[in-house]
Image 1 (tube, helix red, strand yellow):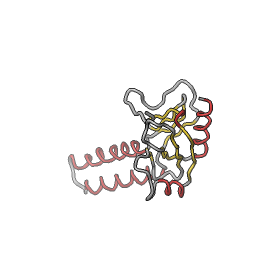
Image 2 (cartoon, helix red, strand yellow):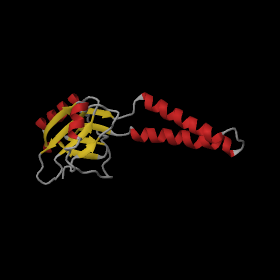
Image 3 (cartoon, one colour):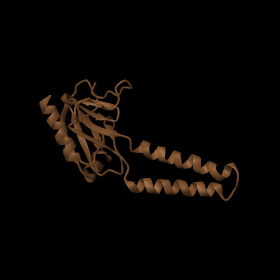
Length: 166
C-alpha cells in the first residue's frame, strides 16, 4: 500500500511548508536546443512557400516543442506532511527503512544489470544524483524507490528526519 498514485490527490499543495521540495526541470540548454531544432524544422517545412505553409509550421512546431519540454520537466519531488511525493505518487514515511543518497555511479549501479524489476523508478537522465528509498512494508512487493534529485543528500536527510518524527 505504499505506492498510491490517485487522481483525487494531486502533488502536494499543502498548507504546511514542505521539509524538502524540488522540481526536476530541464537544464537551460535543453530548452535552447529544443527551440532551435523546432525552429529549424519549421523553416525546412516552410521553404519559402506562401499562404498557410508560411506560418503553420511555426504555429504548430514551436508551441508543441515548448509544451513537450515543459512536460518533461514537470515532475516535483517533495517531503511534506509525513509523505514522500514524487509527481502524483506518494509514500508515507512510516514505510521508509532507509534513504541512501546516490551519485551518478551509484544510480547506474542500482538501475543497471542487477536492478530489481519491482522497484519504483522516477529517473531523469539530465540529473546526476538520486536517492534510493528502501521500503519496509510487508504488504507491498516494491523493494525500493529510486528518485532523481539534484540534492540527494538533502532529500535523504529530509526523508529520514520526517520518518523519525512520524
